[in-house]
Length: 84
Length: 84
Image 1: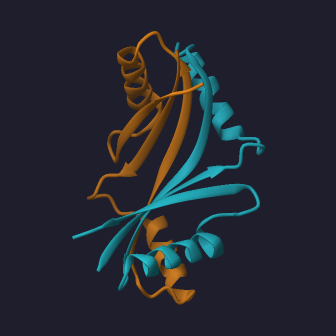
Image 2 (image 1 turned 90 degrees about the vertical axis):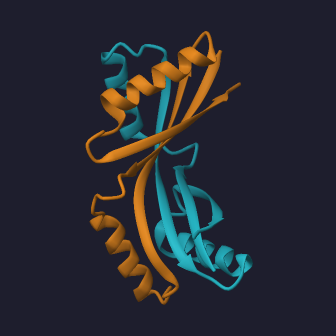
């Protein structure tokens, strides 16, 4: 089956996010004073072929650990959608 | 109330994604041959203060259009979560 994995990568809570701080600053300059904090992460859509959902889960976990994320400073979650 | 906006930004379907192509290539090199396609986007968490959900919705839409996304090549969706 064809699976679409939606992967969300965020910085761990204790890691400083200078890009997020810059965006917060820019939003304030644009009069969005209501903004308190911005954290920037990544979103990836991976389309893959797998026999079962369990196999897809295992593959995506492997990719995240090996290549897609940096486990030292980032954490990730993902969801699997059966694609057409 | 305190609102957490989870914003997902993706390239429009017709826009080439060289970063995604590079990741696909790297995954194949790591023996993830099951991978067919990768698209890279952004994920942002914005914490803000708003009186109502409607106001929060309006603010986030404004930020996305003005600063957070490039409407020429990107599209976005977001969800609002009442934060503590």
